[in-house]
Amino acid sequence: MNNSMKKNTEIKAQTTRKYVNILGINVLVTTSAQVLTGVKQNITDSYKFFITTPNPEIVLMAQKNKELRGALNCADFAVPDGVGLNYASKFLYGKPLNIIPGRKLFLELIKLANKNKWKVFLLGGLDNESEIASRNLQLTNHNLQIQFAGGSEITPNLSKDIVDRINKFSPDLLFAAFGNPKQEIFVHKNFKKLNVGGMMAVGGTFRYISGQSPLPPKWMEELGLEWVYRLITEPYRIKRIFNAFPIFPLRVFWFKITGY
Image (tube, rainbow, N blue to C red):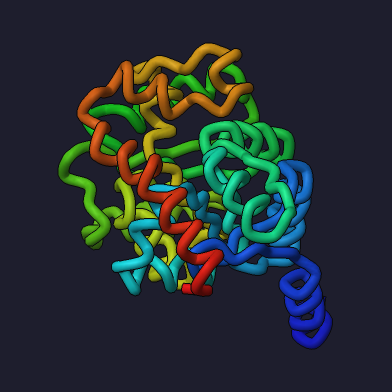
């Protein structure tokens, strides 16, 4: 594809995506299938991109963090993760959002990578999460080429050795787990600098894939109560849960009245 055609394709892709604005953050109106199609097209066309998965907690965090707000609003795919965003969209605009949990999108992207024999890099995570997660993923995705760099010594300020490893491997997809808001800011700052196809901020996904955090029951997922399960299994999250409910609904109500 020549430069002119590529540029036109990029502009068209950006302008045809639909968003809703929630507390100043543009959140994508989409489906998993549409995201996967967009990712595949971008990698095929060598168009670098990054994905974020805003939820109520992250949207609230972005109210006071300009770097995070900029990262979220510059994302090629700001995929809604968290049932509170769906309620907010319906309240503000009468439009529902299709909520796509980040860990589920991650697994769909891994399947896509396996199908297309893409290279994947897991970056960050606590302890040996990324190492165990990479092994678990390879058990069921035999075409997947995967490398990792994790543990407490891996921070968003990547060492030259890690940068060299990433650039030499040249992954099609790099998944970064540094916690909010570090990971969102990291992918925004580095997706063009590193030799990668695309990047995604994935939060605690490596913990789930490595089996170090339990998955919620299906019925709780379907009712949008995953946050309750995480509070039960990880009570240290109570402050973060409190931000998501009731502070987030109150801020959305004020946004409806005042516009800011």
